[in-house]
Image (cartoon, rainbow, N blue to C red; front, side, top):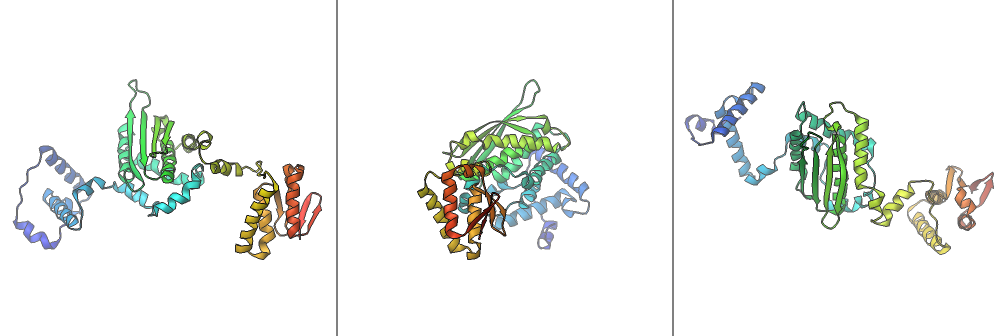
Length: 357
């Protein structure tokens, strides 16, 4: 509602403006609809009241520094409210560094499922019977927030309708500003398409200019009204696999493959010779002595060999463990292990279980 400061002037002054018939009709319809929805809101009681409120507040915003360019950056309120709950301001160089090791980490469905399914709820709220046009409108709302900002240069989508009435295809292009942040965003976009019911059929990525292209195909899930959660999560996983797979991983830094291998207890890390073994154990030992507690030293050493998959810790309290079968059969590495442990503790063995004292 207009402030009292301007009311007396507005009662006596008139301003004539020329607008197109289409805009005039649009204004009439808009004010009429909003008045029916908000009978007590004085801003919609008449076109004049609406004009006064809009013009006064726009001038106030201009006075505060807003420009015409800001009109292009206005976000959809529903989208803004949604993302404000899940986003925060971060220091880009820090997060660019931190997430580097996360590049080929699969999605944690337990953590992300609820958030991803909210995208589906927002899309469904646009229309009772979803159309491709609704999908484009939804994309533009997302694009208004993420299309051009500090971490992305641009994103766009093109729909290719099937002339025979089959499911539409699409091309999604996304250009980032930072290598690791952009790659995480690509994984996330592929996941979102899966939840919505859109299948990724191909993925092109260039690390030189951080360009990404996803070829898309709509599925029946896009138009289904039921949740079909399991089917959507399956499609999500398939989509993300296009981005993070061994074919791509093998062309990348060695650490990504090693990180995946380390998750499998059937994989064992060994050393080419004793000098390399001694170097790594010494590095671990130095940090334990510098940053850890003396009383925890033996347990930490066992944890180190446990993570190499050389042993299985039986009970933490009595420092007992079993040697994995591969190391048990490998005389050289078994000797590395026992020789090192014997330097720091007495070792006893009962029925294949070793104890440190």
